Image 1 (cartoon, rainbow, N blue to C red):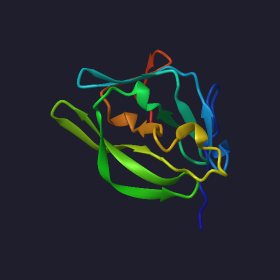
Image 2 (image 1 turned 90 degrees about the horizontal axis):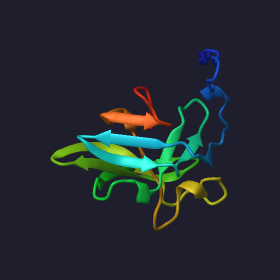
Image 3 (image 1 turned 135 degrees about the horizontal axis):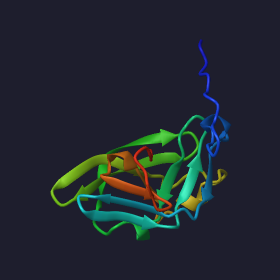
Length: 147
């Protein structure tokens, strides 16, 4: 079996291969803005960054900082060994539906450090920002962000 050979991280970069296993969640004060179809979908400084070995960071967003009415529960679910059962979300902007590009973990295992992204009544959501027209991270337009 051939194992991946990570590229070395450059100045100011992080290597996903140095992220922990099991995954961890950490609050971040980064300013995250996502727009699509002329509508500001997200504007937050209250995101939670999740780091998991070999995965790009995912940012989970508090529901209060997501525009009202843009998330619609999608069909399907999946299971993560660290975060538990995932729910999926469509993003709806006008007549356009971006299917299954958001997800949340409403009940992660309590022994793991995911309480910052979850509460039974209001779990944070992650949105696959690559599918959005415009996104900013700390006031810099970002064209390569993942979730």
